[in-house]
Image (cartoon, rainbow, N blue to C red; front, side):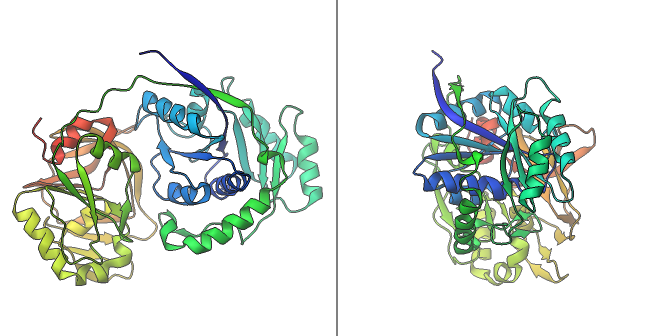
Length: 435
């Protein structure tokens, strides 16, 4: 295969830590360039579900997750190459701190030669912000830093102190005051789902685009050359199979890449709502993805017709994949944030219970009987009285066993969210393919 190349302006937004305002600023920049008539393709580092929903609405384009451990370098390379063919600008939003994780945001930026704009809340400091930015910029030789975006910058004098302290090769790309009109709404696992607050988000995007307008960050950065990658051909292992996918306010943690892969393997995906529908669509297999079932316990519990439909599906031995929120929905009961217990499907023995601010997160490999699949966990609940698991996730950087994995008849259930492209053959087996 001949390697192809294409150039496109690109910028990578990273920060010293979480909570500096990366997503708010990424959304504002994306909307500003979109208002300029530019095609903006945004990527999100890591296995995030909620940020991409927000950024997709801001940019008007699909948002992909990029993670070199979860998806592989070649996958990430090809996605950036495909985006560069159609975009006027590529924006990548990092995760956590700039050098946190393995691979980190800095690793991803360095691998694809994308310059980084450092996003930093400068509340309570001035020249120190320049010192921190300079330290980040010079920490590694393989990382290019384009400049600093000073968030929560109070006054022009505040901005001047920071600007004068920065070295000449580290410009101040934007200074942004604290603004409640722009800040994005949050919930216990992160940002609120875009579909729930789309009108409010539009108002915030409009304000955000004006917030950054006229500053250096809204000028197109220098082009970056992206190269095609030789990625393996997707095996057509689900030809003729229909997969029913739960999708509504309670179940929405779905990678577009996962749906796309199922379809490339020959499956037809049909969507249904455990909240609102009384009947399942005709299907050979089912996917109950993650989401926020704990916020919709009463409605989920009250939909007895759907319970009966899914139990019948399970009793017939058909394949079901239940991830995190879908796993909780599969249990006998779910205890909500107020401590009230609600009956769930009961296709897997056990009780799920929310536990406030404490939780579990991290990258893991799902060690399934069907094969190993890269995955991640992110939840603030616990399960108890469950059956003996068939295996556990393997943590990326820790020897302790990861999340338990359960199988019963055709059901595979776990807290883990799977990234299907990391092992299409194993995923096809989970959905009932004989391969």
